[in-house]
Structures are given as C-alpha cells and as structure tokens.
Picture (tube, helix red, strand yellow):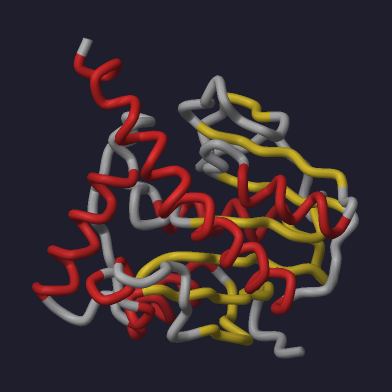
Length: 210
C-alpha cells in the first residue's frame, strides 16, 4: 500500500535525478577508458549505466547483483559479488558503480574485480568521497532516498582519498587516473549533493601505470 502511494514520487525521482545522473556517469566513463569488447557490471542495479555503455560501445555486457531487479535493462545474474564464477582475465572492463560503499566485503569484491579483468583492461569505480561528518550525513541521506524504491540497504562506508588509495593497494591494484570533482546532478540538487562528493577511479592490476 505504502509503495503504491509512493509510486509518483519514485517516478519523479527517476526522471529528475536518477536518469540524468546515469547519463552523466556513462559519459564520464566513455571519456575515461577505450571501448572494451566485454563488460562486467558488478552490482548493476537497474542496469541503466551498463545499458548506456553498451549502446555506445556495442560491447558484450553482463550484470551481476545479489538483488536482481525485475526492471533491469541488461541481462543480470543473481550472484554473491565477492565470489564470482568467472575466469581470470575474462573481461576487458569491470565496473563497480556506487557499490563499494554498500559492501561489507569491499576488499574481497575489489580483489575479485582485479582477478577477472584482463591484464590490459581496467576496473572503473564510481563512488563517493568523504570529507567529515557533514559529508557523510549528506551522502547517507542521498543513499537512503536513492535506494528507497529498490529496497537496497545502505551501510554508508564512505572513504577519504587516502582510504581509497589504501583499499585499492590492498586489493592489488593501482589508481592510474582520477576524475574529481565529478558532476552527476543537475541544479538545485547539486547544491547539496555536491560534485566534490563524487569520484571516478580508473584502476589497473598491480603497480603498472599506462
């Protein structure tokens, strides 16, 4: 009953916030990495970002999520993302878009992503940057509102720049390019959900830089 009553709000949020945000994330990723032949989107949600990338690149795409959504617009498998049944180096690009701050196993998940990516490929991480209590409160509120319709839980594990470097290094990777600040929201939402809270990372295996 409550979800039916909230349906107009969800529809408004998708049109005013989620869809423009997804398009900006897609454009930023396309500018960051060459077109891959194979893409794995871990924690793909409704698949809108993977679909946008697929439409541009014409790549072979697969999404995985521990809570597959009925409205997903790409093929999705229900899998435990920290233990994925794919071969080493199977994908040219592995995407983790706003996933790691939800995960209780972020290190294991990033290690899996690095295992599955081709040695010449990339991991792309879209996530948030924490600058203290105020930023964490704003990000947590954004998460609660943005995930209300899908029912995805929010852990709120927001990291500083230093913590991102530590996490990637511990997983066996290197950040070789960073997009920050990253504009993903229109005005007026951008006044609160600031571009400084948004981050895009290009990660490679080991210590190699390209």
